[in-house]
Image 1 (spheres, rainbow, N blue to C red):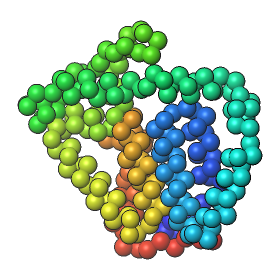
Image 2: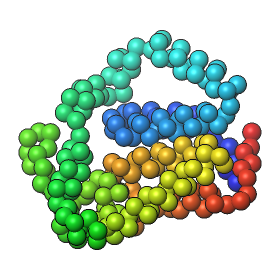
Image 3: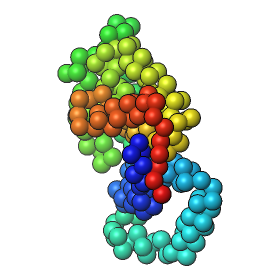
Image 4: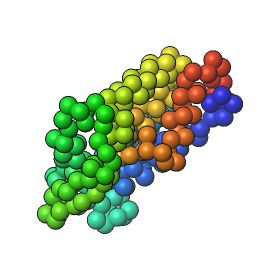
Length: 210
């Protein structure tokens, strides 16, 4: 963004397509946020013809045939996920039930964050992955995690005025972090949060290329 390098028009479309094929609800939602932010940033004159093309494709394509062509089991996977829901809600509930006043303040030892829950097939699923970056952060530092979350909201507010596309991009990362440990986990995903933080506080304005 700072160097004026533009993003090709088809990138957001590819992200939405791949996320849809993966049949991940949070992935689809976050990819749509990136898609919306990208085209809002392009301005209304560019958005209208693009939306018109999307609408024409939506109503002209036989989506059942198309999805079966991609994966003949894809429709069943989508229906199954919509019907059975996601175990992540149970993981959050299980974590909250473990909290007392002290653990709410100082967090939970990581070895005690493991869970055993009934999976979609009826079998018992066991894991220590909380599938939620904010729960993991709270487990590590307790109530201090709310300072980090407040900081993320401050960055979002800064980005609304500075760069609408990066705002939506950062919003997508924050939303995605509610369903997987992609932040505050000392992994290779941390660089995305750090780069957006530095961009948000940088006084240099964007200079987007054509």
